[in-house]
Image (cartoon, rainbow, N blue to C red; front, side, top):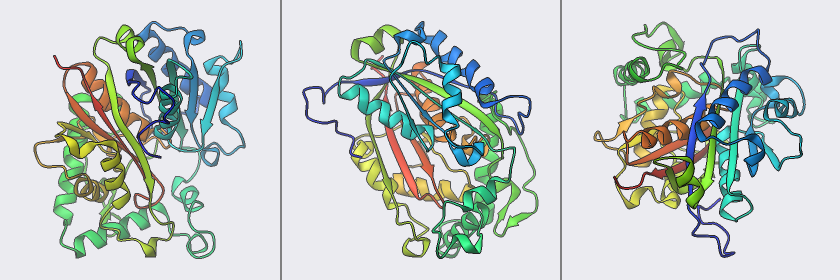
Length: 360
């Protein structure tokens, strides 16, 4: 999982995000299949680079069969990609940020010069809170059916009891995130001032929790001179790493995220200051944990897109964090950014990527 590529003569190969596209994130997309939801995003990201499908060296996707309700559901979306003539393709049963990691490794080893990474999720057909319970320890936790909001509330309570935050501070995180989405993110599901609402599970109110919805995203990676040809200002991935916490929640300090800190260290985050952070924090309390783990001060712009509190399409929200950070570098709004993705209860699995633009 380290950010250093295998020592095969290509370990100094620079890889960049050269294009990013996402769908509008909606509460329901009953009229669309996964293929129909993904295809416009794939077309848009290719148009932005001028590449055709046949010019992509590697394709990798991220999704979840649990959400789709069928086995090997990702094979259907290949109809949207175009799998003939045969393509080099892979899939991860996780957020698309981990698909991006696999594609990054592929390019670093010199097996391809370009990669298409996409992810999608439709949470609307069922109860996502119940579905996510199935990822818990099957012997001790899953039989109790603690859903994702209840577990996040347990983490929030631990933070409040430790003096790291309070309910007013959490409400401010929600307000700032959705205000940012109103200003800068036309794709967001929730934008502008929203009432905090009643308690979902104390101390978390409705406003502290992510929206349930459907959406998709895609990025294109390219190596070296190819990246410079395809993008005026590539977002170079200077480091990327992912780590995991213990599966048992009772073995962890829920007020901290050592896996995030270690991934950040391995990715080179602490070598130099960043100006932007796109954090995959579905709950307001999780932003508190991540800010501490990453050592982010008030001078860092956090979640200028609104983050997962504004739109949280399962299996795509982490990839979107990388895409949003890269897009800011593309348009000159950021010079060095950190992007974070998570999966599992209470920030169980964490990925950190550090991106930089060329000096102006």
